[in-house]
Length: 132
Image (cartoon, rainbow, N blue to C red; front, side, top):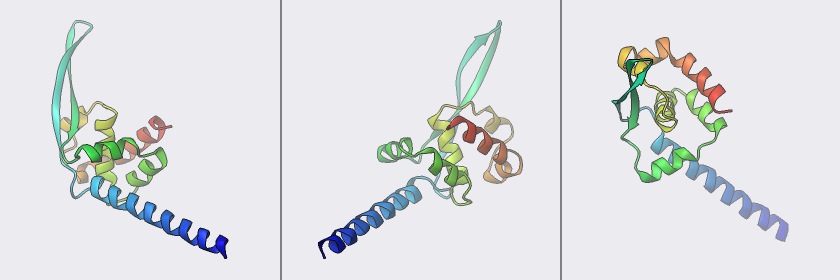
């Protein structure tokens, strides 16, 4: 009987924890609420030529959201990148989190639709390799 009660309590706590994680994911990583800026970073001198780059800064994450996304594991990032409700947001957050060069957002990607048409598969392959 004690074993049954302990097992039931354990399952309740597990379900509550996973439900809480899902709510945090939906709150912080979703395509509808992601807000970001494309900023120019300081030019760098390379082989006598000034090279300027761009970075993404996510505005829609508060401090708790930043802590949450920094703790997301690779498997979860890959699931988020392959979900139509979170793919764009996950990609933007990963660009910002890992300071990936974002010049392509200035030149070619202005929306989720443009990203899906030409860059989604490339970015997912990049993150798959990078997040090993």
